[in-house]
Image 1: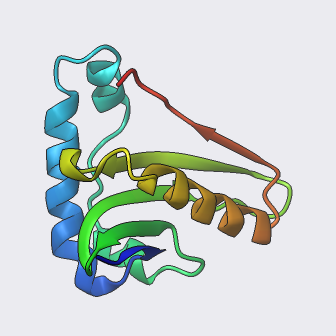
Image 2: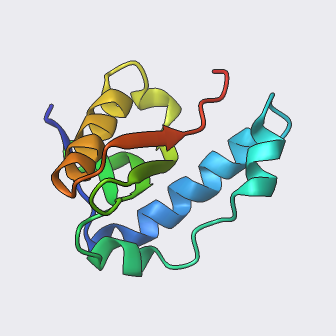
Length: 124
């Protein structure tokens, strides 16, 4: 089995949209989940995000199958990066994908000149 975290590409758009729907559904009724859903709308244009430079979406894969994603805003010099969404399918959790995607995003933020990172953390 091969495990990888990489920058998302346009071919990933259908699975990114599907995983986001799954992630949002899983938040309904959870502690903090409804507040997050009210605050953060679904991503309308995954295609634009997967072609942006610098990249703002990373995916986790097992044998080239996407099993998770992280979407963030990359800051300008001296700014704050924001992690908007992180999701890994239940069967691929506890393998370190969330940590690895976060490290990749933070590296991109640092390279862009960012100095801080913000994000929501919910129970579970």
